[in-house]
Image 1 (spheres, rainbow, N blue to C red):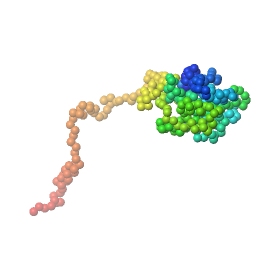
Image 2 (image 1 turned 90 degrees about the vertical axis):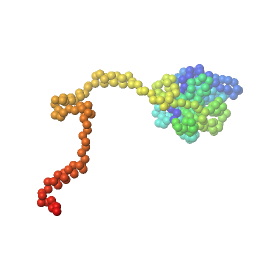
Image 3 (image 1 turned 135 degrees about the horizontal axis):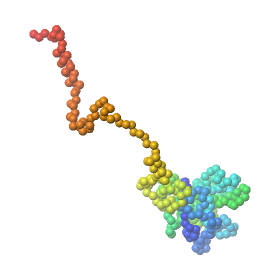
Image 4 (image 1 turned 120 degrees about the horizontal axis):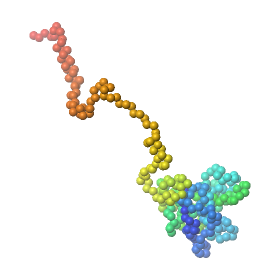
Length: 312
């Protein structure tokens, strides 16, 4: 359902946008983990790295669970129990997970609770706007043959709100406001069951349609976010290869010879011009009834005298 996000903010700007208050009420900025893996992008797709906001307690035992860390993670959860050496061999899609089955599916049972903090492709560029905070879960997978651990996440989805229902029947689980974000992240103080109560549809969202440019994950330009008018049709422009083909067809393609039209001298029928046809009066149509009457009259006149009735 959720297949594209956008987080193109520079790292320092994104850090300030994620400012929060800790348990003592002090204003703080989250610290980064593996900051070099963060790549701003206007068009993030599954299997790319996106910034995820989570509690410091996940990485440091005894840390204050209200303190936060930003860590780039692979979008598309790879569960810790996966035994293959290549994560791409995972046979099912873990880009999203449904809120109603999150506690039932094996894929998500071992996952810790975090929050994907990445604005949707519909969200406005940050200028004191709140980032679009989507609830998610993450896990840490260790390659069977050894190597670096892979942190990955999935976005939780819920039934769509009324405003989005015409677009899709599912939407991301949005944590609406700082209080909801704090409760979702602070697993040291908030139980899993209480945190799941925060997962529900919300109408507090603005959105607009964007161009089909986002369909290609290689496109990474501001055009991916620009609003488009669905009622206005754009004039299609021929690509470079198409223009070359059109030019070749116009100059070098073999031309078909048109059949020769016979000259007037070769025709056995007279050639009438349109002007002469228009000046000639149309002949009066002869009705079938008039012909029949003249024929009967002629037959009557030619009858033998012996056959005619005698008049007295």
